[in-house]
Image 1 (cartoon, rainbow, N blue to C red):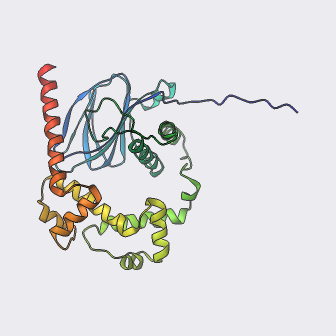
Image 2 (tube, one colour):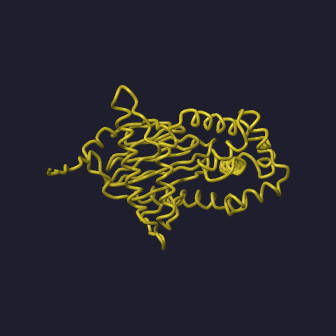
Length: 309
């Protein structure tokens, strides 16, 4: 008996990665725009932004993604009220099916959000370049790059586009391609309910006992679920959520540190500052200063471009 192999058809191939960014912008951030000969995607993780693409303009909210084709001019600015978090990826892809994404704004699913998150996780391990520098033009490898990390980034991004393409070009939505262990419907529903519960109670001081009681779940099951999803306990995750909210409030620039501490239910400004530094490795003042430096750098860059363009 003789076997015969077949060549695997590749509908979409990412040839090169140019940039990978995760930005935490200030509420008044603006970028005057650029164009380049490769693809770029921009996805809103939190907040809201106004985007210009050639002669079109859009307002994008959480979960929205826009695709900038090669040589398309694009610019963005925050709405002045809510500090946005943005994922930006640029890459070279010559596959014919990319035409589908031209001039489109779509919404990503949880499966696709998971893939973007995996790309950011791998990029942090792979490159020593700061992923929050909007003026970074070249990724630099870390001293010790994990085995296969860049191939994983390529595969995650290709899977991301393949899923989007199939989901938006078929009548019936395709099944999620999250790992099998994440496909337990009841577990996913329970997890989503708990996340919504934590978000709705972000201003309170919650205990494990209270979370278990309000969500009708056992303590061990709750801890196991969050250690599987996030490699930490539910209280640690809730603390990180609070600090993420604090970072956004700092960038919104409508409250001082004491007001933010009170708003998020901390017992004192000192406890808030300790928690903030533990999570971010910066004090609230240091984080605020870093955001201001980035904003000033952006304004200087925009002024420079306006002067010479």
